[in-house]
Amino acid sequence: MIKRLQRKFVVIAAVCLLIVEFAIIGGINGVNIYQTNKNADNLLNIIIENDGRFPEFDPKGMKHDKPQDNSDSASPPESKKPDKHRGFNEETKYQTRYFVVYADSNGEITKVDTGHVAAVSSSQAIEYGKSVLDSGKTSGTSGNYRYKTGDTDKGKIIVFIDFRSDSTTKNRFLLVSCAIGAAGYILVCLLIIIFSKRAIRPVVESFEKQKRFITDAGHEIKTPLAIISANTEVLEMVSEPNQWTVSIKNQITRLNGLLKELLSLAKMEEEKPALTMADFNISDAVYDAASPFTTLSETKGKKLTIDVANGLSYHGDEGAIRQLVSILTENAVKYADEDGEIIVKLFTSHNGKETDLEVSNTCKEPPQGDLTKLFDRFYRDDSSRSRSKGEKKGGYGIGLSIAQAIVRSHKSKISCKAENGMMIFTAQLK
Image (cartoon, rainbow, N blue to C red; front, side, top):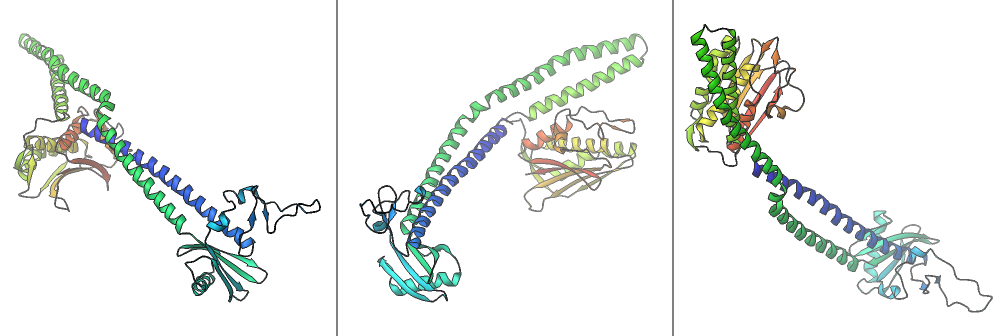
């Protein structure tokens, strides 16, 4: 149980860390890609607005096409929005490699300008232009170039900017951030694994104290119970047995049974339960453990059917498996509807890797809510499992907890479901 708790802690922490890392790395790269594309689009807009060429920039981000006249009569230069030219300077026009394609209103290419790029010839520029015109898109990426279209008085203008450097930078940033994130994730996971024992130490100590208390209390209670039982027998020898002495003996028997089951549960939940693992014929074990309940079910007006595949072998603790069958069968007989049916089945799973033990009983009013609670200690569903038309069910509410502990000690799984008027408990024995 402690190792299982530690594994859950590590898995939950690792998954949470992975989600956070995905969010951080994805957000950083998303912002980087958005900003890179935005800068390229701003460049494209500037070139389009200036009919396929870069304007002159002054240090204040003001735009003018010709040298300014310093005379008082000269009109002030045209201002632009500050953020439009942000990040651009006098060298931007010389650092940007681009070419321009012009087309008329009919979509026929009339002119190309490849004077600002060396990697594209005029014929290649025409091919790029035709491809964009045929696609009908106004912006996007074509090969190593990012493009955008604009309207002019004579038709359309298509500007292509060399995007290789930006794409390489984006990809490199993505790879580096992922590599750093993966290395950090592995490092933090190792630290979580190393310190997980310290993190769950209070829970482990509490669990160990609980087990120690159950064991010590069980041994301490046995002595007064034995004395009470002996005194009761003496009273019956001195005088005739009466309802009081019979009631005392019944309660002693009940307490002894409860102590036995509590100690068995504490033993099964140990880190390494003392089980004798060996190969045995599980078919015979299941049949032998379930058969004694045939008479009990008949006395209650119920039918028990045992359907066991012959010759199945299993590696485990035969005594614990027999106890598992007894617990599940007794539970099914106890809570089956009046005149109902109980079915005990043993078969090989579809994948052939597991041996499935399935115990089911008729149940017109199955428990509601989370059925996994049935495996909790002392849990009972008052509406359908504790009483049935005045019939007392008895029990201590820990039988299914013991069954779950037995299955887990064999590194297997147990589950329950309500289906088609049946309560079905299935132990998938690996």
